[in-house]
Image (tube, rainbow, N blue to C red; front, side):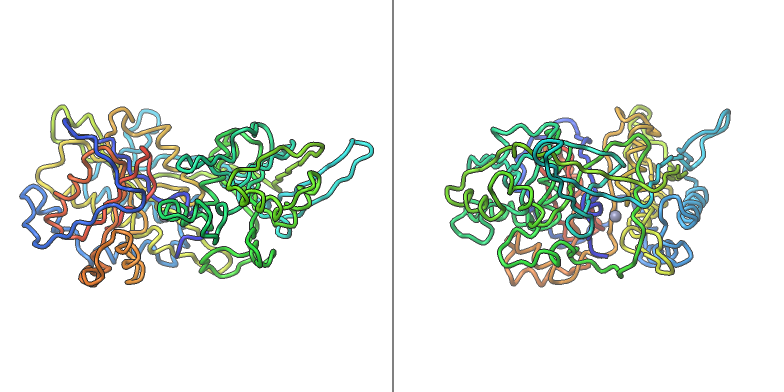
Length: 522
Ligand SMILES: [Zn+2]
């Protein structure tokens, strides 16, 4: 399915490029989201050590694995469910058949098994309500706002809690050095409740500095979940008690349809109880509470302002207008009907490296095995997300096992649980690694590798790379692979070299940040 909910957008793949060969050059990354395209004109024979392994990866086998993992029998593989348990048993059996070494937990005095237990905490029947109290405690007024009418709680980890504080209006919640614009300078947001507007200043206005070439491209996604989350998460780092994002800020947009709309959602409408699964001890994570313009106006009225008046003030000089609203206290109450512990598990296998000293280092290849489970009779099969990536890890494990000469470093194969709930299985692994993190040199993540999109998505990606129109048609969607990784290492070179015997049209996206988000495809 297409990415819809914030949690899904936030949990795209992470590819850590810690594996720098000696002498790797620092290089300047291309602008975010562009990258480079390498076409392989002639496919070379695979080097001898990898030949048997590469030959063992076939379309037929991959399809068989995906079909099995995505079958109704496995009920959508939700973390902690019977379907997930079956899927993880299946994966562990394959590891055993192929001679992959168990690298999961060891019971007392026993050898390691393939499973790593992950305990999660589940809250059900979550609710959220907000109160705006103005004036003195005895002579004041209280306005209440309701979930699904005035607000939607999109905190990724909204553990039950009550927070209270004054509201700080912080414009669009943006800091953009290129034009010297900073909504967050001059206001203290720590321990306050921050209200920011959706999108960027002057959306649709060609006079806005954010409508100019480079910034226009940079903020292209800011009218969607991607931008909303990026802004809310950046603001959350400053320590506010909660972040409110005002939706439907554009003129002429209907308030409630806009609030209720979830972009590109293909899911059927199912009346499901609200539920949260986190690692025990988790505090609230990223995300925000989305509120209607009406609700924002009711709060801003205390300062004699409204969303429209503040937008106009910012647009008059393209300067921030941020301030604390004096004399009011906002209380955000999130509640849960029930809570319990869930027992889940990662599946972990390994192939010991062939080099006597380098085998102490590990390269981890992983994918999430879990998906969204089922609601009533409807099964979220998750063939692409992420039976495809899990099948990819299994295929790579079998291929490495089939090689006469094993890779120099130890290869660790991981199938994660609880990714759909916020990277829970992999977070647990980082806290309790099968091999020390200090010796873990790279992580390769496979998420949704089953399809690379249709011609439209291929063309829009190639347009961003400025590939001439006549050349675009020569790149088949099925042969177009996108790989994202951190800039600064030589992973690009390693991938291009490896691709010579594979022949994908490789789109490599180097991200400037050390921990990047992107996709690893094919
Ligand atoms: Zn996924």
